[in-house]
Length: 382
Image 1 (tube, rainbow, N blue to C red):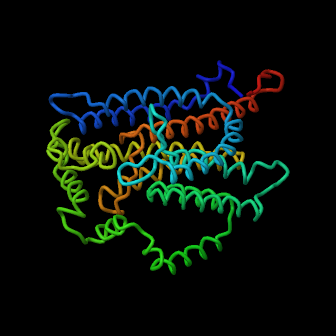
Image 2 (tube, helix red, strand yellow):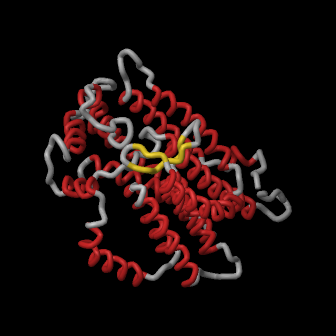
Image 3 (tube, rainbow, N blue to C red):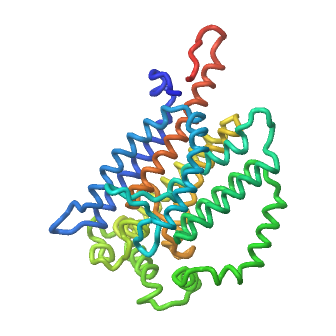
């Protein structure tokens, strides 16, 4: 189940660890800036994020040392427990920020929808490729995965947490598409969604309708459009090189709502300018291209699907968060991975990437063994 210790340094993907550490440190810098007060420079949020980052990096390294196949089997079982947690959240969950999304354990709260992003890839990959006697997924297995995906979407949407629900839904649909589900299914589904849009509109919450109105250009700049307008002002006022750390007026004078979470990219653009914002986007793009390149080299289709499923929530969250801050998508409550404040999101992202690292490390180790002459190296991954 655990790698031989001498392989941990040889086969680790150090580029991924470098990117993760760099993005996390940038996140700490701007959480510090977004929560800075002269009478209390180090806010509670900053201190908690520092502790969360330390725990997250430790978890990342630990998870990467465990055989991904062992975690996949347990993850498949764990996802049924996640569905129970989602139902429990709707009945007895802790209410906050307009939603019933957390389970209060006394010392801390956790968000079951974050666990859905973490364990659904294991559920789907094991359901589709877990049977060694089956060459390719059957219609029955596709139906099970899609049925569980729809139930998960509806439970998370009911909290209400439309942003996370969409992340889970889109990630799951990408997985079944990559697993070989027919194009015909997606065409028919898209047509049905388009036809039912007028009906679906009536099931949206009032604040969700307002967000769509704002995206289309309607709303009062001092009410419905306030968050988006302040984010645009922050981005535009940063200029080419920015105003400097702790010197952003929209940030430091508290005009920018949710500056430490959803709108932290606007803080970066204001204080580091256009060059800093482009630098962050470039950093994400290089990291994701590197991860996708590593994924394409995985020969086992089940492991490849699991790896892509673990990556998709983070890639989608990054694209959606940056796009909504720039007014290219409606505003939804999705944090920017590794940079926004949020312990649940940080830890689940670290676990996901530690799991992904386990797949990559084992692939590199097994590939190296097959390239060596017979009899020279008999150590196997356990």
